[in-house]
Length: 101
Image 1 (spheres, rainbow, N blue to C red):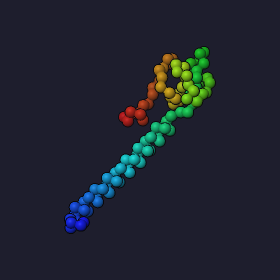
Image 2: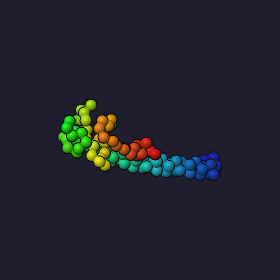
Image 3: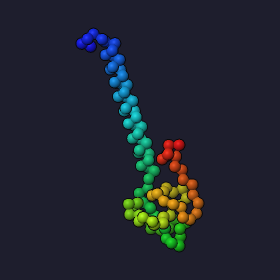
Image 4: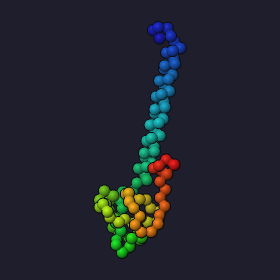
């Protein structure tokens, strides 16, 4: 403005305001996406008993206390509390929230 270039000053202010708006919009969307992913997680797991791998019975423990290599029971429609491998039965997991598909 001190040099008398009012149109360039207005353009710089407009671009700055636009970039600030885009940044806040992106930050808000990212916060919502992260909250959605956190809502998908479970805070407990069901340690399966050896005689009942497919049933919902077992010991309920916090996810942080699940021993590595232990067998877990996940009921129909349930959420997977930790990563693992299916050792008995069949399943389908909807991973679209994690992969973005």
